[in-house]
Image (cartoon, rainbow, N blue to C red; front, side, top):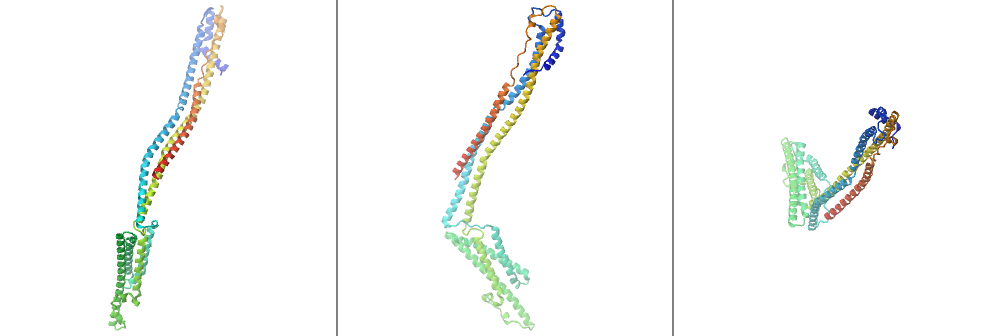
Length: 460
């Protein structure tokens, strides 16, 4: 690298004016200075010192630029240790998590196994061969029961209205009450009676039979009573109408005045078929409620549905615990990957910045080196200028030193040599960092899979 003649001339002209080289050379020459046998030439030493001072400032600038670059490149040389730290932290977290999850999964597996054991023991004891039959929708079963009540109420209301002074409204009130009682009795008898007839234990089977018998008996009695009450009410109304007709001298049915005292006659009186229809409606609703109570709200065998649902719930909780455990195992890996990726991205950005700074430093170094070369050439020009002007003005022979070439300053060392070596090391370290990151992540994934296999094996 070399400076330009114009640059050297400019530097020489500046120093020549500052040091008054020509004037002093003529004055020294006229005075015969320096002496012919002089070993040193003071003006030349002054020129060299002035040039050295300016060069020293430029060399310090070169060193400062190089030092700043070297510090930046050194920051990139220890990144692999940070990757290992993040991976080690994730590995430790995995081990700690494995201990915690092992306990929670064992507890969930034990609960699921206990629930399944209870269910199997119940099936063997009760000789149940089928899977629990639970209704698809309790709302649907309830809706069907309500619909049955509504149908009976709508069908019975006009029948009761004939026996009521309040007309159809009062008939609906009585019909809805009767239908609701029929459904309630049947539901209780089916759920707590017929279902417990399926149990193998003598006590529960006996209680179930007693409940079923009580519900059926009371339901039949209640419906017969309601039908007879309605028939008596209609008979009383007809008898009162016949009495009024007799008092007015109008024709009337004499049988109405006699009345029908026995219940069988009232129930099967062909003149009032509504009484029998009312009884049939009540019995139909009672039977429907018995069936729906036995099968519409749970498995026909009591406790079979509850135990099955408990076992399924424990299995679901165990499956959820396994899924949560697997998700938890991903957290340390995800966190470590995010930190390592952020570190690599940071190092890449820093590397790109330092490359730009290196290119800028090279440009600055080039300008400084050109200036240094210009100063070296200016030193030679100033010394030659002094010698020529001095010899032109003197009448005595010049010193012997005028015959030797002007001294040249030493060339400065390559300031970017160390920074360049550090750059090469940093770029190699960046490549090694990426390889280390891949290796550590793969190792973490392998360890996570090993932990998963161990947890699955221990909780199976």
